[in-house]
Length: 174
Image (tube, rainbow, N blue to C red; front, side, top):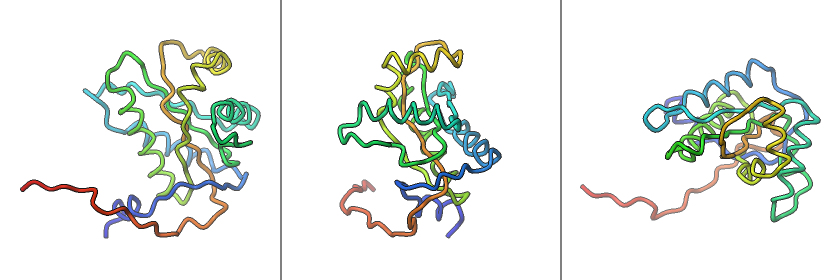
């Protein structure tokens, strides 16, 4: 099996992280993989906000928790890096384009030996006044929708568990 297929087949969501920050070169490479994602009509509308500052990361975790029906204290599972994907609401494919960015980043992280997980509620986070204030502080203007939060870091759990895939999900027409 080639390396790409192995990465796709073996990636799992990580829900427990060490607090150690990965090197910035790895984070930048993961971001670049996200920016290389396919997009409708090649509009490349999604943007990525990379957060490694612990105080901002904790603020975002608390904001995300506000919309978490499970009310987890840290819905980012101690991950030291949060890569927020936002996309221009005026682009009809914004949600799909942003989803592809997130998928690419999770696969890139796994290929480098890092754990990752897509954390929802980015939409709610950046419709919230606190989330809007964070974007304003960063100078991000425009009508963006939060698509998802990609958390990454060194896994503090076994990531080699093989999870069987549900059957009867493919229908073929020949």
